[in-house]
Image (tube, rainbow, N blue to C red; front, side, top):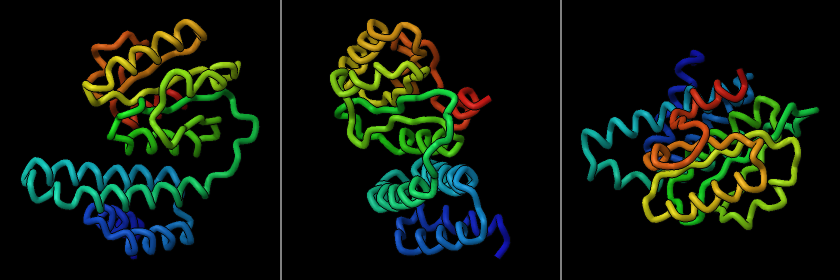
Length: 203
């Protein structure tokens, strides 16, 4: 199987929600020397781009498969994350988070893994956060960026509270937000594309 075909097979398994096949193809790719970043970009993000196109064509049909697609994605991401070693002398730290009540967490986890694979120290909580959840993280003087995913109107007040809290505690930290609500928030930058965000931080 060619390199491109291997990456495509992982993407297809994710998109249809076949966790067993996705993990089998993933492990074969890892054994074959594929890197974490390559798999995230060319398989995980590809699957979600293709799922988005499927949703545009057939909203009802695609949504029936969303849960299994999401679970397959999480399984793949957890395996990839386990392959990343502890960073050696990371140049700085980044907090990648979604607010409590935020339902869309895939982008958050993709960003965290891409940045972790690049050797940065990443704070990424599995649950959505409130301001009090990150008080200790804000004490880390190596923290340079806070990245927030913001997609749901009902979480806007919590996001705003986090932004204000970070500003008060760490005015030196840059806040980047992505998602439909990002343009309405008082942040330093709005970047919703995971790859553009990745390039921004590792350039």
